[in-house]
Structures are given as C-alpha cells and as structure tokens.
Image (tube, rainbow, N blue to C red):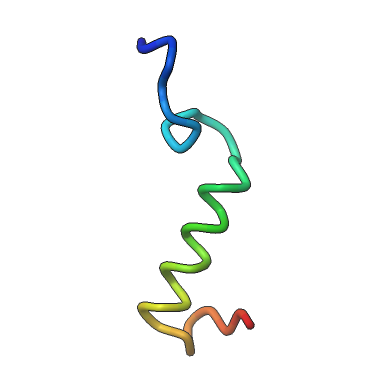
Length: 36
C-alpha cells in the first residue's frame, strides 16, 4: 500500500468520491440523477 495514496483511492464513503460520482451521473444522465 502506498503511504501517500490519493484521497480518492482511500476506502470508505469519501465525500470527494460521492461528489465525483454525483457530478459524473449528472453530466452523464441528468434525468437519472437530478442534482442542481
């Protein structure tokens, strides 16, 4: 395991990962995930 691994690679419900997923879903299909 890398001691200086990126926060995105860290396990668990990371807010950054959730935000990225929400943004990705919104950009991909705004109807599936209607987030303003």
